[in-house]
Every structure is written in structure tokens, then in C-alpha cells.
Length: 179
Image: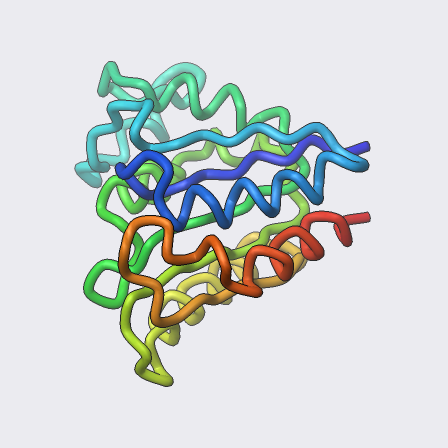
């Protein structure tokens, strides 16, 4: 049994990203402990690039915000899932702030071995997910992580529009497939 942490990047409660993440979690809970962390529940400032965390005791960031709570949860995870709506061809700003704050030597304490990606976008462009997939692959390569899979959903705009979409079953199946 692994511990899976899902970071959801939508501020909208009950939105399409949250529903997709929940479907993944439902599948994964058959064999694993799963926790969903929503950016809506945390106040995380953006990284300012000062690199003081490289010099501070315990590699703590000088910023006093909710990122310390997220670090504690990530220290326990073996699998990390990134779930985000697409905002102008990128992940949400709130989720990006969390991802950027992982630029700390503290990440060397994490036990994460696998990552998965869940994305929801309103557009139908064929290249809609390409910028995020490139960044995701670079993170996998840099940290030598295994890609646990992706569920990428286009043409989902309105609140709840994903409810009848086959991507929910795809996300459930992906969650259930995590060994």
C-alpha cells in the first residue's frame, strides 16, 4: 500500500478538476491511502527565487505560509498526482506557486517515486496540453520519477460538464492501476 497525494489546482469547489481528481482517488483507494490537497484550502506565496532555503537550517523557506503543511504531506507520499484546470495553456497560478516552492533541498527528503497528471481544459486545440506535458516530462526526468499516467480532458468548460465524460472512468481506472 502506497501513500498517494493529489494536488488539485482549482479554486472552484466541485469543479471539473476536483471531480476528475476524485475519480482517480476513488480508484486508487482500492489499494492505497489517498489524500487530496486542494489549493483552495491553502495559502501559498510564490517562490521569490532567493535560494535562502539552501542555507537555512532544515532548508525551511523564510516565508511563513501553508507550504510547510504541504511539505509534511509530501514527505509521506510515494506517488504524487498533479490535477489542474488549464489556464492560458498552463496549470493554475495557485498550483504553480506550490510547484515552484518545491525548488528546495527539502525535496530530497521526499519518497515520491511516481507521478501522474490530470488536466482539464475548455478548448479543443490539439496542442492544448503540450506546454504542460513538456514541463511534466522535464520534472520526471530531473527527479528520475516514473510516469504513472495521464488523463487529459478537452472541451470541458461549464461547472460539472465532466460528469458524463468517459474521462472520469479513465481517471478511476488509472487510480486503480497504480501498483
